[in-house]
Amino acid sequence: MVLRGIGRLDMGLATVGGVGIVILAIILDRLTQAVGRDARSRGNRRWYTTGPLGAYHSPFLSISR
Image (cartoon, rainbow, N blue to C red; front, side, top):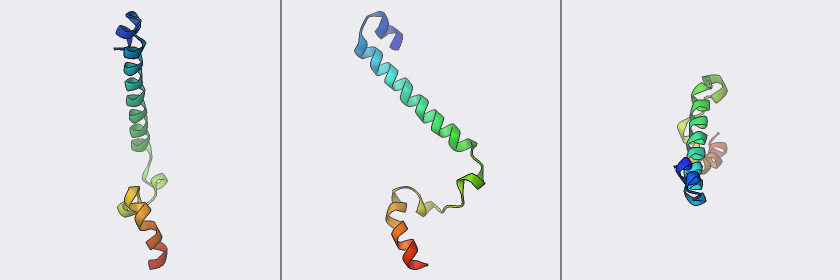
């Protein structure tokens, strides 16, 4: 898609293809970094303390302790 866009001098087509490649590269980079970390560097966090649910649940953790 990128080469076709550049060959036809269609910058819109080349840009769309290039952005797709960059997004795919970022996703693959994040996944391989997450797989490469060992358990000690990740910590022993519970499932309910991470993500969007963690933002809701974290204020209640300090109250319950």
